[in-house]
Figure 1 (cartoon, rainbow, N blue to C red):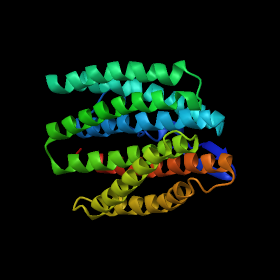
Figure 2: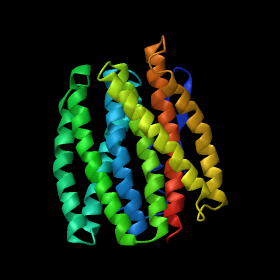
Figure 3: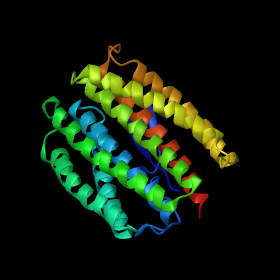
Figure 4: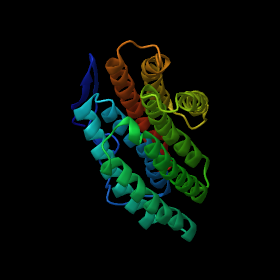
Length: 270
């Protein structure tokens, strides 16, 4: 895969093929391939809802502006494309109805993301809008998992949720640094952190975890150390610009690892 530098700031660099990593090479991406692929893509919608918020908040901080804008624009385009794919693939009226509702929630969220200048004043509206999108995206993922009805589907869902949690923690860290409902943001970070660590152990110890998956989880452990350290500095950093950059970049690197893990689990069912 051709790779390029996506983010460089305050001495921190991550290299991965932008959203190319999120769309595995060698697969036709114009439609959903099967139910495992549907669970992967539906779960990715959860992550993108939080990743777009993270990028918007980075712009509100006026930090990593070119990279944050690229992440926002690319994530928006991927969310819209996958939304159409998942709605078209829906194997039941109930799943299709979820994605019809998600279209409406997404329209409101997109207006918030693209129709307002990123600033502290718009954070509350952003968080309300992305919460609705996240809830429906999670509902769709769970419905696709149930439609598959196999243990591997649950593992794809759990692995995919790790991607979302990485972006959710980063999002709330950046909102707290803007002074928006800091206590609630801190609580959400702690909750997501606990869920992330428990899910990592579940994925590591699953009978389906092969050597490649365990190796990738070890790499993710290394990325987690850097990301968690950046989160732990919330409220204690003297250089806000540097802290925003650390949170942004380390969350992107952790996302990259967890996306690979999710893809590996999804491939087990093909």
